[in-house]
Length: 121
Figure (cartoon, rainbow, N blue to C red):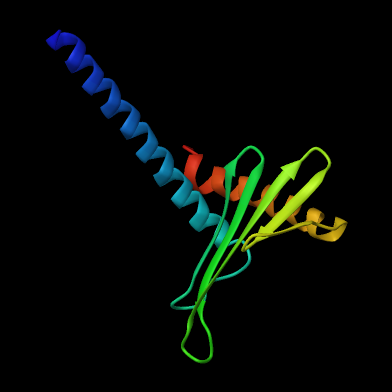
């Protein structure tokens, strides 16, 4: 009985550890992805990352001219019949030019993330 309880606790700790490692990797990938389009302005934050095999996320925070803190999240869902973009609950299919830009950004993201995070040479 105690062995079962102990094994259950250990299994949960391992699962929690894997989840935390995955979150940390996504955070690091997001930071690398956010630098694809130039340096991030001081006091701002920009992230671009692959959430799963069909989802890309663009997140940006900045302070506007009035000193107000702003934030924008854009999610791209890659589907067999096209790419759907969502901003604050508004969904729209992206056009060809935006789809090609996303494809190029995803390619650059993969190159840089592999080189900066997963390369062991």
